[in-house]
Image (tube, rainbow over all chains, first blue to last red; front, side):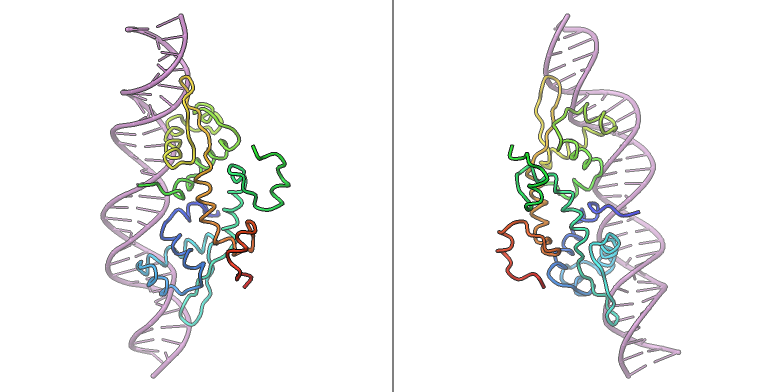
Amino acid sequence: MAVDVFAVIAEPTRRRILDRLRLSESSVTELVKLLEVSQPTMSKHLRVLREAGFVSSRIEAQQRIYRIEAQQFRAIDDWLTPYRQLWGTHLDALERHLDGQQDR
Amino acid sequence: MAVDVFAVIAEPTRRRILDRLRLSESSVTELVKLLEVSQPTMSKHLRVLREAGFVSSRIEAQQRIYRIEAQQFRAIDDWLTPYRQLWGTHLDALERHLDGQQDR
DNA sequence: AGCTAGTATGCCATTTCGGGCATATGCTCG
DNA sequence: CGAGCATATGCCCGAAATGGCATACTAGCT
């Protein structure tokens, strides 16, 4: 069964990894150096992120290159959507269309 | 020190509470009945949500009426913002303005 | 084939967290 | 002020997750 998207991003280190991968794809070793965590710890977090669909990896020589994937961020964005009316932000015309009320 | 917003919403029951409070404010007892959790458990989750700023409460007779607060949802939304370019959604004109690159 | 760089996995100890149950606290009313 | 409803808190236990460390795995090079 699918892992809980929110549980995955609850981990601070994993969010740092995502923040980094958002800038560019990286190998495990690069991430280890950049974020200053041990290599096993990094691999474990990457596994969680990968299995949850936040990142994907490809093999290049003996390295694994990780890159960010949009999908699960959309899931979070979707969850957030109904709450957005709390502060009156409109994502785009679509949302405005969906609920004609709002605006207190 | 401030609690971790993401850790707070990592809990499924807490998200259910938020989903409910988004519809209308409620007393603790109402929430207990609606979500079918024990009263102490409910109070504990509400405490976490309250201390994290997701909800606020007011006293009415001997009841505590809880209601949702926008603030922390904005925080999550803010965190999400830089990732949105991953799937090319534009929140509004402002974001498009902020990063003229994108579109790989 | 052996060596090595790069990465993953297994095991352990520690900590954190959620739920259950009992109980304390607070408010209201007779 | 005593009773009762509404809610919060304390304590305990079990489950899960994280990091450290050692080690296994895999591919490329000589």
